[in-house]
Amino acid sequence: MSLRFVLIICVHLISALQPSLLDDWLGDAHILNAVHKNSEEKHFRFTRQITRELCCGYEDFNLDKYTNDINTCYKELLSRKVSKGNMTICILECVGKRRGFVNKQGYIKMDKMDEICKDCFQNPEMRDLAENMCHGFDDMNNASKGLNKKFYLTCNSAIYSLLSQLSYNLLMFCPEDMKQRSTSCNEKREEYNQKKKDAKAKH
Image (cartoon, rainbow, N blue to C red; front, side, top):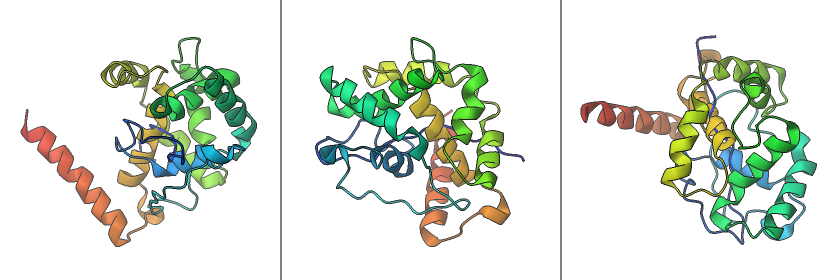
């Protein structure tokens, strides 16, 4: 498949949390929902509905297999008094360490990248698509270094960034036979295309 597809998971903000600095960055209600819905903690589940229509394929991000890890990490992070704005990114880094996806510094192990992407879905066709879209993102760790510094993050954003890119690529480079062409999906694609044009015009 001619796709490159990966960058972030992310978490839809919960009732007790302030919006993350990255909440609107390549936004990801899909990832936010996937992380937060698996929490046993009532106040960790989001109440503010940031919905996004599924624009590619047949299944949204699904992290149900990591429910236990998400809850364990959340409780550990609460005990460390991690700031609200960093919680989603820190949960993803913590789960990555527990599963052996990242090193001690939170950077993605390159031989684990495909597995991370595939595990965002359960549908076989979506898993194959995610795996193929993950190819070519070897610089994801370097990209996360810039984000960590820019947003003063207390945890490594490598997995968050990976899943965010994945979500973006699903929107922008979805195979024609899997693409959803609703008004909202088309408007979002056009918005990102315009941003790319604007960015090129500045250089």
